[in-house]
Length: 251
Image (cartoon, rainbow, N blue to C red; front, side, top):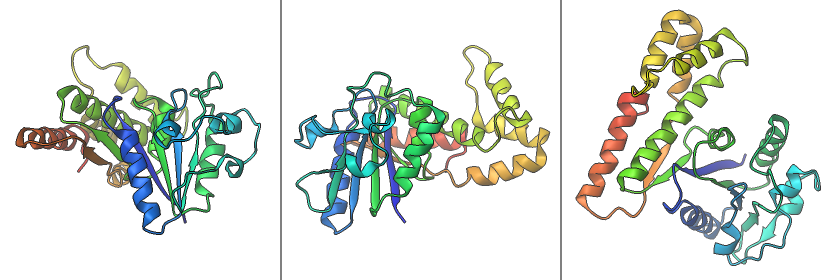
């Protein structure tokens, strides 16, 4: 079965794409069959760092039904065992995926004949990015020790936690309506605490709340602090971990 490794970041410029490439090459050199896919839809540039020209069919061709499978999208990279799928930002609206095409993409990923399928996601916390990030419970989030990057990383983790929790319930269900109502009634200037939501949710929906809380324990994103060099940088990493534990219940 393929191991899916989504790599995301709260903001650009933190080294997410470089990490994705180096991880892919390392795994390929260890003898694993690896697919590296540029899922920065609308802003794809991973091919440039790989030294490849932007003249091959990419995700856009699959989205716009010019091909029915990922097989025709694979490019050889020059690295044994490593294949590449271009993001293809030549098609307008590629980043705005519909429900059904997103499910088709997920199916193609899960049916890949590879050991590892690495997704280099776009920066930020759009729903499509979060949904691909949540394909596994221990996806990778890249940040740097800069305060803006740390805050953006926390915001991403918060959005991912709410998304992970919300997706456990059917659309238009009382549970989802309660979650949306909880978020919409947040007081200006006061953070919407995921831990508070979970506690109140379990009081109102005890059975489903308990199941959802147990499922949330599986959500264990892996955070990489890139370009950290000093003791102060380590302290910033500790602050992010402490904040995630306190506000989001992520251990």
